Image 1 (cartoon, rainbow, N blue to C red):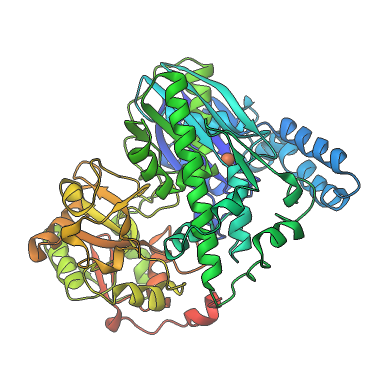
Image 2: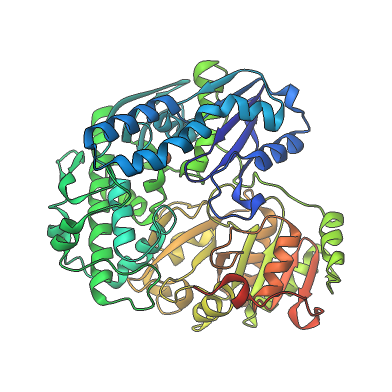
Length: 579
Ligand SMILES: [Fe+2]
């Protein structure tokens, strides 16, 4: 039974293929087209998935789309009519795109893939919920989804039992925690729908001075349900997130997009909105546990990528076990929709917990070598143990190392297959990687990868965090020793790794630990600012050559920057416009 789940036409297009319920392949379209957050029909991701499973279009038993376009269409139409004529411009701008894309999906499937088989439509929050519950491996769990907006819902809660997933309640548009967070993302000078994590990263630098002010925008009930005061917002009727009343309430105009200055005021605003978000999330999680009597919680939706709030839920709510799958945002709904069809509609047996986040394309040594040879790259092919020891030695001697291995990660984080690694103990390593490799703002620290058996010793956390979706404090004994990964408030966004998850990455950090006594390395995604994470060995080599990375390990091949021939390419500054 081959089921293809699709998510597209909104933020992040993605495809996921289940073969007898097992996720064989899942990937975001942006990695293939190299267009960040590509929302177009994911034809490349689909073709990859079919290749990976070694099946053809004719072998697909059913395609399921992640939401219901007609209901979303209904919401858009109704809000346009409600706010007419203020909404007229949005109406004129938005409608033709809808007609041209979502409503033509059957035609697109036929034209792009020659697929004419069954096509079903899930619902947005059901797809989110399913992406977490059906991959959790639990036979009973409470479920919470929180995002910007789907069809009408912006948050939902329910219960999963066996094959049943029942959403029992929801909060509806325009009342949206995700859109409130996005409004503040924009207010603080970052891009909506992509830079929310920057706002989260900025928050620890500020003080929660504006919590009371923000609570004039959002009224939060004791059970975590909320209503926004829509007189401050514009997203339901125009092209803007908020209006002048919002800026008047906050006391200052918004920070211009990409401004180089970051006044204290916006840091305090970031801290305040993060504070309110955490409060709402903890209250919602608490009330879901109280309503269902179940202390295992599956969570999804864009807000579930707020790993600081996730850490708070573990600490401050009655939730005992929390599961968030690595693609908690809209891309992950491709997987969720596929499980809606497989488990809920077809009633097929459940599968164990998501076995791996490495569901994207992988390349063997011959394929890596072919890509490297095209660029006349100078490399040394090494045996596994020698490669691990040499790489650990290079990280220990303060080199910035590209680490490209195996299949690409599913979800927005690099988890040791498309990563840039560095020594977390080196006090300057954060600035070095920020300025020389990533060309990004200096305020955000990097995330650590830690050997799972040491997580409780290095961080104040009592459980693994395999997908980098939990934040915890650095333990007292390690404070001041891991500057590159420690945020200003002493916290870190952790990825733990055990040998079963990934032997190669685990063994590398183990080799580093054996040399140095430090079970932690810096792990940041292999991309430069504004680019998606690399996919192919060619992408990796180009990223290596366009940045000041010192070393690249691609499969069994180790390359030193100093040995490489000059690449006839624009400099990174020209190429990526250091904005
Ligand atoms: Fe969503």
